[in-house]
Image (cartoon, rainbow, N blue to C red; front, side, top):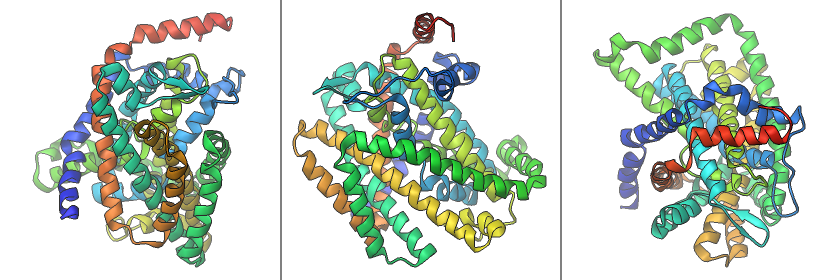
Amino acid sequence: MLTDINSCLNNLVWGPFMLLLMVGVGIFFSCKLRFFQLRCFRTWWHFTAGSFLHKDTDNKTDKNISPFQAMATALAGSIGTGNIVGVANAIALGGAGAVFWMWVSAFFGMATVFAENVLGVKYRIRKNGRYMGGPMYYIEKGLGCKWLAVLFAVFCTGAAFGMGNMTQSNSAAGALHNGFGIPCEISGAVIALLTGLIVFGGIGRIAGLTEKLIPVMSVIFMLAMLVVLFSGIDRLPDVFGRILSEALDYKAVSGGTAGYGIARAVKYGISRGVFSNEAGLGSSPIIYSSAETDNPYKQGMWGIFQVFVDTIVMCTLTALCILSSDANITALDGIELGSYPFTAVFGDFGRVIISVSIVLFAFATLISWSYYGEKSFEYLSGGRGISIYRILYVTAAFTGAVCSLSAVWEISDTLNGLMALPNLAALVLLSKEISYHELKHSLSLRGKASGKQP
């Protein structure tokens, strides 16, 4: 009965209405901010990645993390197995055209994440010297709707144990077993031990790990993908032509099978894009609100950078590797399709690359989601029982590694979607708190303070 109920809920929360709602909110904020993510690319790049060149980064404190650490932790939570298996599944189910719609969801998702993070910083609280924020706080304080904030926190806590924890440890243990023959029980014990060492160290230890792990593993994986792409570089023009033709063949939209294929491309492209970058779910504002910053709009730009790296860069490279290979897209499942280009170029070592990447991505996601769940649980409990939460989280990491999780996958996927409903409602109802003029004014004040205009 539980499976049947969840199946109905899942079809609703990840159905056409939800996908249109997520993209629609992104379009709304894109228009409201005058397509800031595109028109002002140099500006938000200047305040994020470019800040390391002109040494304009905010410093962390003993109590709070830096904006870069917040972005690295948020990126660790979103960049994961979905960037490999999720992209492969989107292509297998929706064809090459799904990649274009993944780009579309990411483009508008940048504006959504920007709005989330601005509200997160504006409505955050300070407790014992530490900042805490997220949808539960701007829903309660901004909308005055405590029950809706509680509902979000419940969904987020459940999703943290499911999609953020057990499914990730299951993927990591499976990759270690398939790639190196390591028993899942041993992998689970090691994953649980490492998780405990990090989680019980608090946000400082979590951010300290992600700011080192995410750049290194992202660069290594991107270099491997660039080698694969270079080996089939003559195919790339045809790949881009195929992506656009399968996504935008308007003549085929009204015509039977071809129109059905484009509908699938739209559905799976947008859903996998949202699943990858988490724009609209409300998870990333929880960590961005913890950063030491005095500028909500600048903090919002780190969210734009996060989505750009996660989907526009990482997911695109994965998709191009798959489409430029001679893989049989319809005959292979997600993990086989995602690993095929690497084994074709690197041989057996390609499986090692994919296995190690999945393990690192999954573990980074598991660590990041521990904080999302902990802050949601803390909101629900009033700050009590945090040690119990951490013990349960570590236990779940071991359980996920050694058990079959088909039901957990499905239920946690539903909880992920349910998180978005109260969050998207709050974003729209509080949209008056975010304006393009306030954004420009905020940046001009910061430019004057530093002696130059951005």
